[in-house]
Structure formats: C-alpha cells, structure tokens
Amino acid sequence: MARPLWRDLVKYSNEGKYGDFVKNFSSSLALAMNQVVAGHQFANSELARNLSEEIDPLGVIRRGEHVTVLYRQRSTKKPGEWLGRLVLGYEDGKVRIFGATIF
Image 1: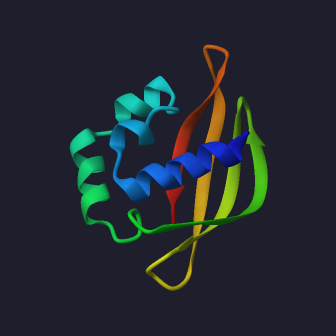
Image 2: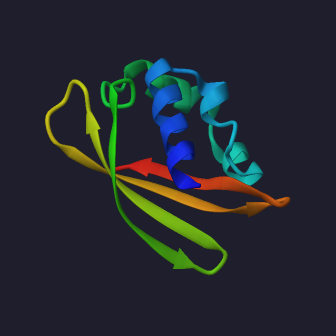
C-alpha cells in the first residue's frame, strides 16, 4: 500500500505539482501544509525536484493507529542517500498520508 503512495509523492515533487502532491494527505496534514512554503520548496529545492524513482524500503514500524514506512531515497542530481519517512493511517475508511519527509 505504501509504495504507490511514495512513488506518487516522488513523481509530483519532481514535477512541482503541489495539488497532486497533497491529494492523498489526511485532512489534518493538508490543512497544516502552507501552500506558499510548499510551492517555494518545489521551486527552489534541487533535491525535491530531482528525486530518483529508485527506492529501497528499509522497514516498517507501528505506533498506535499509524504505520511508518522508511525508504532509502536517492537524487538524480545530488550524490548520496536520504531517508524517506511515510506515515500512513486510516481516515474515513481510506489509507491517507499523515506525514512525509526526506532527511
């Protein structure tokens, strides 16, 4: 379930499509996202606009009602590796994203 959601985040981040990027966010996360800040990130972050489609799942942890999936994420332009974190849970009977970050 997590892999297609992460792939969509990578795709829409690379394309700078904020509306598509947040389409699977929980309502609380979508409300917390500042469109101006997110748009600035898409426009100015070399990492956010050049994520590799190659990902390696590293593990899953569970906390209460949420599951956190960790990925090894690479860039197509920057050398090195990053840790991707995707927090999933249910909202209104659907799997939604409650957190997504790259460290």
